[in-house]
Length: 329
Image (tube, rainbow, N blue to C red):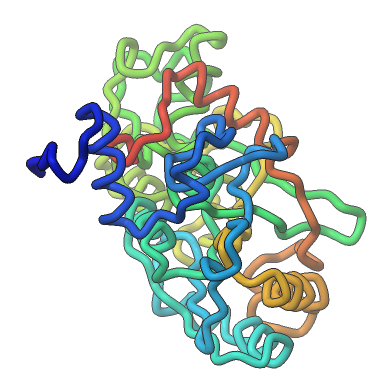
């Protein structure tokens, strides 16, 4: 965009910032000299909780009649639309709004949808959550957990049961399925954890991005890869649906727990609506629903604090040199 200096009698970087603000409808609050940490220029973080503040200008608050909800990209979006329906109905009853499920095809598309205002509530997977927070103004407030407050998943390394890969050193010289560059278990955590185990991804073995957890595991079984890296919760759900036989794979290594999918609302939703959304999440009963059957061992949504719960993930991403930009999604 060419900047007219008569209209913008300021430096080029400042003029470009203003032009960007006009393009994305950024509020005056975000253009002010506010504290924002790693957040995009569209947002402020005056209280230091690492998530975008509610705009101070009430005219910037959003209070839609129809709420759009999206779950993280999964192996079969059509199936998940049905699985989430009991919760969608509950969310609609509690908020008094029409709620629609939006099936997303990629992490970047999901983040862009919330950034542009087309997505109001979303479950972002572990690695992309900080991107959603910093680029899209997502505010994490819940995770799936058990009655005793436990939550999380592990990174699992699998080989085929009939292979000669038994331990981490056997990955050397092999073709290993990672999921995507922004995935925690499928790429970033291995970059930090594996060298401590004597294996450097991309140097000691070939990285092949599969695109998703299910494609990694199914590709392993089809012979496309020698090893697959998977999030335990996804592998468990795939086994429960009969998508593979656990006897056909060998668990080579498993990490300690990471936080699982975060549930977020857009930062600029009307605070009264946000309270209703939270009420819907924390009052939902998984037992006896398709969602409860799909996420075995989960009893309820539990409240979380992004600053604390995602500290380990941010540390892993920092060690990988990750910057929260749209180009890195």
